[in-house]
Image (cartoon, rainbow, N blue to C red; front, side, top):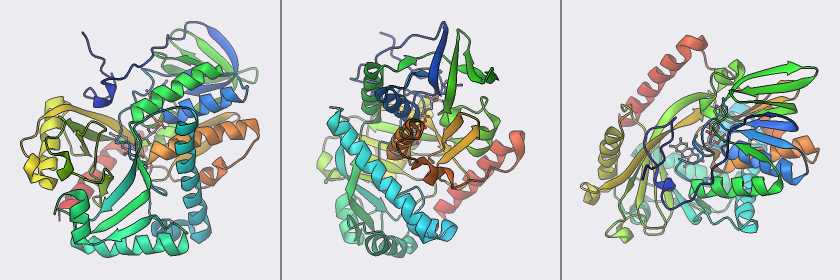
Length: 427
Ligand SMILES: Cc1cc2nc3c(=O)[nH]c(=O)nc-3n(C[C@H](O)[C@H](O)[C@H](O)COP(=O)(O)OP(=O)(O)OC[C@H]3O[C@@H](n4cnc5c(N)ncnc54)[C@H](O)[C@@H]3O)c2cc1C
């Protein structure tokens, strides 16, 4: 049997195993509708679902298969707050806006948990997140972060851990301290993609796969979105292409750049109680973050990033080396899967939400923190169109800057910066 392999990212992910991904045909006609959504990840699917449920006509066009971008291949960690810590956000935007962004992320968390529960989507949710310092000098920052969250942001679920507690909870002496957050958790992201797509289809959204959008234009006041096989004419368009939509819209490409992240899945662990015995997920203090957790069947899913070649074998050997640094007893563990994906990042590491012209909105660039935020942003887009709320403006008002360097230099400059940060992680 030929197993499915995403055409845009290396390696077959473990999430593909044991899940039935419904197939959707390609666009072969001309359709007139209210909203056209470009991109079938969490953002696009959530927007399509919530629009369709409100009775708005919606067509979603995905270049490959739904979830083939970051949404079906990520680490599944939900986290708390934004990608930047509150203290960093306060330095950039002041307390009031930082608090509004934190509250928005908490609303995103509540949305995701209640959305899965109310709609019967079992995405293997497990509670608990550990964030840990890979250098002793960062421990004080974690202590302060837990304190700030409790006293200034009213968030009491994040507790500081000393080195001893951290070692016991991670199952490794590699880290020096950190935070245990009992108010969040982790999921199997592909199960969420499949569940959301099913609901969107049932609600009346028209979903198409293998339908790469090649151009967006305007005629007679309508937006025209073209693919090789057909076109969609709509009043509004949502560009939810994240890291992989570079060619489609220059403004989005200037603000969201792709960086590769890689994950390996081990065979089910022989002694699962020695690794994250409380079942939490874990991320560390590296700029080029390492993130890991156990799956429902006790595999270790371990993610990180280095400059690999595109060969899956290379991903596996690098990930195995990183696993052994944290868990020396797993030095010889067998990896059954190794895969990569593109994380859409912005210069400020905050989501990019922008009105690009009459009726056209772009949402993406969640910078490795999109599991809860992208799903919520899709819903907020729908609420804006329906006229229910305009919470999306909390993100749109951030007015993020573009990456420097112009079209040709942007990516090489980012590569240099990432190489520098990854070196600094080791110093
Ligand atoms: C390896 C990895 C690990 C990660 N781990 C975590 C984590 O643990 N926690 C967390 O919060 N976040 C994590 N992320 C980030 C998270 O997955 C993303 O923020 C989130 O999935 C973004 O969803 P999206 O819908 O905006 O984009 P995507 O899921 O990338 O969807 C964009 C879609 O647009 C499609 N597309 C592109 N161009 C076109 C076109 N021209 N026409 C039609 N369709 C097009 C793509 O094929 C793709 O399916 C990770 C990402 C990766 C890659």
